[in-house]
Amino acid sequence: MTRMFASLGIRNYRLFFLGGLVSNVGTWMARVAQDWLVLTELTDHSATALGLVTGLQFAPIALLSPWGGAVADRFPKRTVMMVTQVGLCLTGLTLAALVLTGSVELWHVYALAMLGGAFSAFDNPARQAIASEMVPSHLLTNAVGLNSTSFNAARLVGPGVAGLTIAAWGVGPAIALNGLSFLASLAGLIAMRQRELTPAPQRRGKGAIREGLRYVRNRPDLMTIMVIVFMLGTFGLNFQLTNALMATRVFGVGAEAYGLLGTIQAVGTLAAALIAARRTRPRLRLIVGALGAFSLVTTALAFAPGYVSYAILLVPVGVAALTVMTAANAFIQLTTEPSMRGRVMALYMAIFMGGTPLGAPLVGWVGDAWGPRWTLIIGAAATGLTFAVVGALLGAQRWRAERAVSSGAEVTDCAPDELVAR
Image (tube, rainbow, N blue to C red; front, side):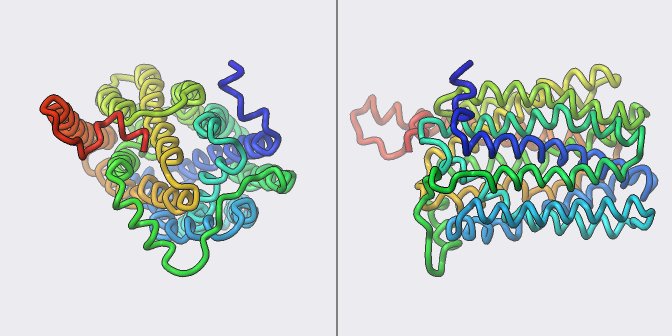
């Protein structure tokens, strides 16, 4: 148990963790509230509109994250995050004001979603890379796991609280609480002791983005991770959309029951995050295996006969998805040179979250054209195909390595398990 929470013994990380926890609760409340606003108040349950909101929210991450990574490697990451937290706070409060005054229109949601995504494009690389500046290298995997624990503990609480808040007072207050929650994250950053951080060397000069791209291109193990997270993020992790569609159009439940789905799914993701916090070094085969498990359980989820069975299946789906995400994140951070970490994590986030602008509108259209269950079938098929292709390639690589060893030839390719040592 002590090892699971070891990073919390470091003051700077503890402040970062607690501020992020409060902010993440607000973020999950806002996601539920925004979806409910679009589906029930601004449109007549339009999956296409909801998919477009989600796509616009993540489009800036795909476009701007490489610059966000360059900024994270050039300027103090703590300072970068202070600026982005203020921006995200103002964006959330602006949407809340529009809702509370009754003047909100769908285009307002589109515009503010895109603006919030732009701030996130600069926040995410700094947030991911700063863990290595707060904790020693032997605690980095623990810190990454605890970051996911914070995010998913908030996911456990946020959707349920959002559902109750919407039912009692409406959408506006739930969105307003999200805007205010960023102040907790900002306070934690301000309270950190600068002298206790161990910043990576700052990159100066031009060509930072090209250098990051070249570094990843020359690392087959990182390229494999990027492919996996792109397919998972683009086609598999659209539960913000699919849960809303299943709740309203298939099961016909209200805001409380819809919010509860996010809370139930968070049980699985939180469990996986706590397990990740105990893990020392993630292996590539763990990532691939968890992707295969995600595909199988999502297939079962698509054919769930009722609300209760659907809710129960969300738990193992959450475990599998979060295992892929935390293991991939830690793998990249542990095997990337410190001076490149901001740019590599920016590319990771751009590929992981940036695929949503492609996937979410497509999945939304599928939901309108073929029905909500097909949104899950598409995700299961895409991730299952990725699992099969990557698994076959890694199996062939292992076979070649073993054959070379048995014949006494020099091994030039890393076996899958050896990739973690890079």
